[in-house]
Image 1 (cartoon, helix red, strand yellow):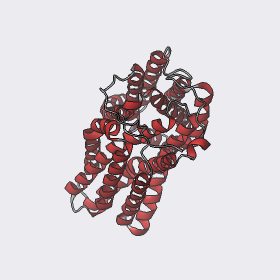
Image 2 (cartoon, rainbow, N blue to C red; image 1 turned 90 degrees about the vertical axis):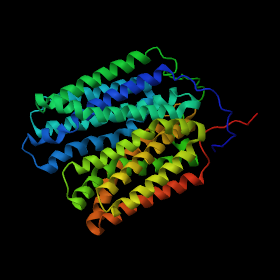
Image 3 (cartoon, rainbow, N blue to C red; image 1 turned 135 degrees about the vertical axis):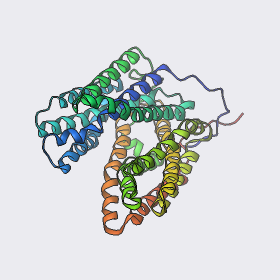
Image 4 (cartoon, rainbow, N blue to C red; image 1 turned 180 degrees about the vertical axis):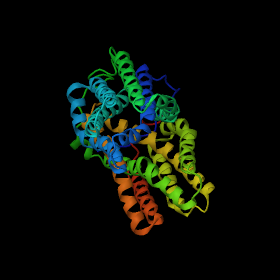
Length: 405
């Protein structure tokens, strides 16, 4: 049973290990390349003369393979280590993405993107495990917020570069992403090649790796899995698919309105992502998780009642702020539970639940919207967020604490 101890005395902020910066740089590079290629994928698929559904299936194939291969990625981490799995995963995505630029038929494109999903699961699970491993115990929230900010920056800059790269043709973004992935693999492999913290058993680890069964017996881990599932459902699923649909059908304004609403979410996230990391370390994981989930609950509950675009912008700004509080807390809680132990399968389940939420959220809420309207669709999402909020209230904080002097 994971126990809660007393809060430690506040100490000066420690410098983050160079391994953290290497992983953040690698994550930024990956996100930048994905931001370039993502808008081009459906358009590229349509060049083969397929339907809109078939073009969308290219994205679904990638997400599906990420989901189903997560347990395999966890096994690879346990068998070969985080650094090797991370690099191999990046190279698989790089090769499959570069080959997409040479695809001659739609089935080839579909298979190549599916293979990329396997590599993506590998480097995502390995990157999370590495970050957990090299994060100082008193800076886990800061590391998580820094990593999230790196991805957010890459995703925001990616479309800007993508608009320029796409001028060379729809195959050009795939070549660009191939190059960024190779660069990320070289950066991380070179930076961590002689790292003691990133090596097997590094960081002072003296115990056997934590298995999924052991982790499942910890109440906080079970709540964490539910938390990342609903967070993925909301932030990676409903926000991307259902929110723009609501804006388009409810306000019937310019096509750019949906983009502005999503930009408001990004603004709220960017505003608090760095403070959230500091607060997660100084105040604890539980206060940030409960507060962030509560804000998300309110934002998604009132969003479908937005009378005008300005109200929708405010709601999504709130949702972005809430997600900024939740994101570092979840990764820091995972690091707390693992401590100095490795746990590829534990991390794989964490990643898998986030992906599962991103897949199920749009499908389930879309079906509810068709049957009962947007109010019910967002109401169900808010109810799930409220349930997770109460679940975090019911368990002790994962942050280890020492008696006061």
